[in-house]
Every structure is written in structure tokens, then in C-alpha cells.
Length: 293
Length: 278
Image (tube, rainbow over the protein chains, first blue to last red):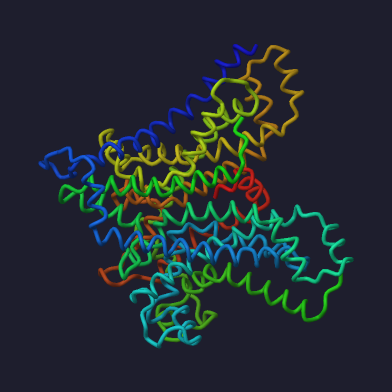
């Protein structure tokens, strides 16, 4: 039986492995291979082996450096905000109150709306003349009246971060909530009898116990933020200092490569992004302590 | 545990804030979609519509191929879901129940794909699909979507399969049923809730995907919904018909939101089982 089950398993797993290999691993390998060449997608451009030249070029490309800086800024700020707000929201939703079921359901709404569509909704809310968000920011004194938020360097990136935080914080809160719910109530009871106050209970019990959950969610969000594309592409097309690595990468591969010898260079950017994200992916897998057998 | 009045007030203020925060953009899209243009383009927009019109909902189908975009999305996301569930349940069952060499390698490979930055394979995949004449075809989107979703499908399904009682399967096997037969007539029916949850997650992911759809479908008649909405254009180049755009957003978002609300518990459970894969 054991021997036969080996072959059965092989046939059952084969389709999955085939699809994944053809669509993920083979293209990845090809991207790596192409990154050592200079060529484009317009017919008539000669294909030349250039070794590591594409990679050296990266560090002289000011637009690439800018995209890298923007990506890191976006990632650090949005993930930090999402984590802090996520913990706060999780604690609120963990309490008993009348509308709890409805609130928990509502928290899935931002996650369920396609990013492409919610980005358009937000673009309308950030409209420089008729946007309700622009009015609100004016009234709160964040911006001077008449400032186009999505057209101003600095502000535009904050608007994008705002939208990303809106979209992912509630979901992060739901994951942290799941961590909160497994903390046994009698630990709190004992602490209360020993005279620990609310704040003490939070820092001494709650926070340490949900730290692993937060850690996993944090690394996972970082992984996601580093490849941010949809929201940036739709809200600003990468203008006004909001271009991220993924947006620049697509621009080089799909626009420039049709006019000149840019495809190899674009592939080098792709490899760079892959390596950057792999570091966090490894951290993520390690922190999950997954059992893979 | 009793709370003081201040704590109660603070709690409810926080709750109302969370509710408004999550739902307001959708509400605003809806309100904007039913306002006539004169009210929509107002310096100080009103929170409630003064006059209501459904003109935008008619126009979105009359002035552009939005119904075709919806059809494209249904086909692509639907087929992806069916294929991913079929292939994924085979692999998931083998991982959950069978002993074989290299299981750790297989699981690691699957997990690795779930974290792939899609943009890193965008260019190569474009060239591969182009050489196979699959650009501007449904197949050209369905295959990549299946690959990107299989990790989650396999992962969640195997965790569901593991929790089923082993005894029924064992007795079926002793009665002479093959593994495949056991999977089909015993395991799958028993794990229907898991299949629904996984299918829904796959469908939503495929329905929402933007980068591949934007790159591999290059004709307006083949755009999926996110691409159509993202590239919404008006009569002139600089003018966006915001009312229509918001109507389109509401049309494709409401069914999704309702679906998610109905299955909320299963979705949260499924995503947690998928090791926080979102």
C-alpha cells in the first residue's frame, strides 16, 4: 500500500507542480537569464550579452533610486500605521458591545473591494475641486484651500498611504483579533485580583501574548507593501514622487522596451525586487514555524 | 465586568468611528453615483443626495462595453476557481493523507509561489504568452491566475482535509475504493464548507487582480472589471465621468460585498488556515 500510495501521490500532485513551474518558476528563471542581456521588444534591436552591466546601471539610474526610496518610505510608514491601528481596532472589537457582529462584518468591506476600484473611489474623494476628502483636509487645516492633494509632491504619497492603510488595517485587526480571542480570560482575572490596572494588563499580558501574531502579520504586510502597484498606478500613475519599484518596473518592461533596448534592464529591476521580497519571505516562513510535513 | 460610563462612551465612539471608516468610501461612491451632475460637481458636496437619478447606471452600459467587462471577469474568475479547486484538491488530499518522498520540498515550492512578487515575472510571462499566442485571450489570464491561486487553494484545502475523520476514508479504502474514488465520493462532499470558502477566496482574488489583467488584455472589449474601471475615460481625454465611474464601482462591488458578508466567518477561518496569506 505504501509503495502504491507514492505513485498515487505523484499523479495527484503533478498538475499543481506543472502549473506552478510553467507560470512561476520558469518565467522567474527566464527573467534572471534575460537580465544579463541588452535587448528590447521592438524588432531589429540586436541581442547582446552584457554580464552584470544592467545591475551596475541600476545604481546610476536616479529614477530607480527614487523609486526604491519611495517604496521603502511607503512600506515603513504604511506598515507601521497599519500595525498600530490594527492592534487598537482589534482591542476595541474584542470588547462586548451591541453591534459587534455588524462591525466585524463591515471590517471585511475594504478588503473585499478590488484595489483598482477602491483606488478610483478614493481618487474621486481626493479630487482637487469636488472631493469630499480634500474638503475635510482643508477644514482640518492639513492643507491650504485649493491644494490639489494628488498633484502635490509629498502630499500625494501620503494620500496613497492613507488609502492603503484604509484598505488593510481592518483586515490586520481581524487577524490580531483572532490572536486576542485565544488568550484565556482567567489570566486577566488573576492579574486583576493582584491589583493590575488596565494599562498594566495591556502591556504585561495582552501585548506579549499577541506579539507573535503581530510579528507574522507585520512581516506579511511588508512583503505585500514592497510590491505595491495598483493603488499607485491608478491614483497618480507614479507622478509627483510616488513612483514605486513595481510601477517603474512595469513602465520599463512594457513601455520603454517597445521603443528601445530596455527589456534586459527591466529584467534586472525585476530580479532586484524578487531578491528584496525574498528576504522578507524567508523571515515570514521562519517566524511562522510552519510544519511542512 | 462592569464598565464606567466614560469607558462606555469611549467604546461606542471608537466603534462608530471604525464603522464609518470602513464603509464610508462605498457609501460615498453610491451617493455620488445617484446624484445628477449639477449636484455632483459642487464645491461643497452634500452628504445626502438632494435629487436622485439612475442615469449613470444606464449610461455605464450604454456608452461603454461595461457588461462585456463584467462577462470577461465572470468567465476568467469562474474558470480559474473551478480549475484551481480541481487541481488543488488533488494535491491537497495527497499532502494531507498520503505518505510520499519529497513532501517538504513540494510544500516549500508551493509556499514560495504564494509570496512571488508578480511584477518580477511580468515581462517574461508576457513574452511566453505572446509566443504561445495567448495575449488577448481568456486562457492567457486563466493559466497565470490558476498558478498564483493554487498555493492558497492547496494550503487551505489540505488543512480542511486533515480535520476530517480518517475512519470513513479507511473503511472505503478497505471496501476496495481507489484513492481518487475516495476523494471524489467521500472526502469532497464532507469538506463542502471548505471548498466553498476556498472557492470564494480564489474567485475574489481572480476578480480583483489588476497587474496581469492590465498587461495581458490590451483591448477594451477584453478588459476585466478592475482594468475597465481603472482606465475609465470620458468623451475628452481630460474629463472623467465621475458619476458613471462611481456607478460602475457600485455595480461590481455590491455583489462582492454581500457575498463576503454572508460568508464572513468562513472567509476569516479560511484565511487564517491559509497561514495569514491574504
